[in-house]
Length: 295
Image 1 (cartoon, rainbow, N blue to C red):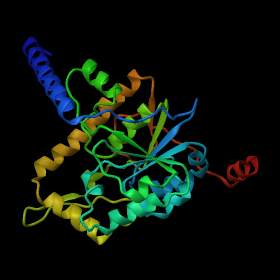
Image 2: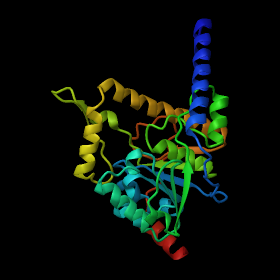
Image 3: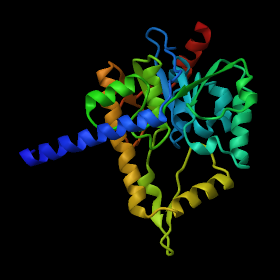
Image 4: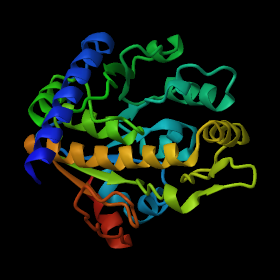
């Protein structure tokens, strides 16, 4: 990098740092995320990509021996009660402004009916339904979604204080940041296919069409909502949002390493290139029986 490029990069980082401080001052509040990881406990963050079905089917013993974090509409599937996640993260504003969306109402009903101990993590200003808040099994913790950029030392200081995070293009970014805040030193990422670029196209009316498959079947209302959202943006803005997401993972990885946290991507075929890959052993009948009789 030449002298001019270094000066330009430095000025850009300085401007981004000032902007981040302004955002934190205006948007952030005191978070309530507690350190809940036990010594040597590991966490698996369960994304909702289509590969999650195979991960659950083939690696049940791996999942059963670790704490689990689920996101978004996972509560509307049988896996919610099968896996009984320890943590649940919501970030998208549409979860807190249902506006007659039956899938969102069903999500809150499912969380409200949880009969095991679970920590629900939501943005600081998000409204949680009374039926959820009154469930003694569900504890609610709040975090800041404020996007932070700029110099590394400032960004990491704000991350550590829980006042912001790398630009949260999707729910996996706050999920991983919350895993670090909760004290986990080893975190696995499953169901994070992120294969959006395989399913994006433009129709003959110049509308962007994106089919984002999940491990479950989306409702017609959800398909319509996503289709409407994408129609409001030109292709270059959507592709840029992909860039922001993948860049945020690299920012997050640098922060994780600075905290002594190892994040491993165990999603087959994942497009995320920021975290080391790790293959996990397939559950066998023998290992399953050993786990059952060991209890």
